[in-house]
Length: 262
Image (cartoon, rainbow, N blue to C red; front, side, top):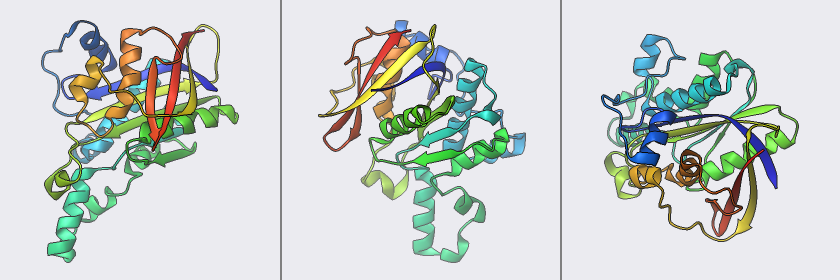
């Protein structure tokens, strides 16, 4: 079993713009008033903040929140960014424009169409020279990102930032994938230590059960929803058993996650 301590958590979904808002909603159904329609990642200059794609905005917002919760300097941290599709809105624009008028492709939108756009913005915005990894593994993306982060810790990294995020599908892409809303979650993981919540994970055969937690019910239409059973367990301080969280890790494979007080 691979293990880590959880030092910090970041979260953003439509109507729940922080981890505290997510915890309050999970526990008593409270929704904050005046929640912003879009994250505003403070790591970017104002002009870049406005122009950044939604996927970049949500990824950077939750990543910085997790670092701040842990009291960690973003410049020092290796990171893993997991997204099922990258930015579906830009992918739809690129495909439609290439089919109708290829010379009209926007250089800026082409620049933001790559899957590792959020990881690139993060390293530039944070001034981070530590390695970053971008992972896509369909509906197992978050579990595979978690495995990558835990493997880096086992290989000697002192702390690793893990970020999962996805956006809504638009245009013709909605006929093949119906992702809705905007969703991001981040964990600041470190080598296991006493006094911190400990996470252990191991691969097994099987399929995950239907997600029934409050966050999963609210944001379950987003492509990154497979990560929500873990965030529901964290928000609710769910019973810490070996099977408290089961995440999709691939065809016929799951990642069993155990949460325990160290």
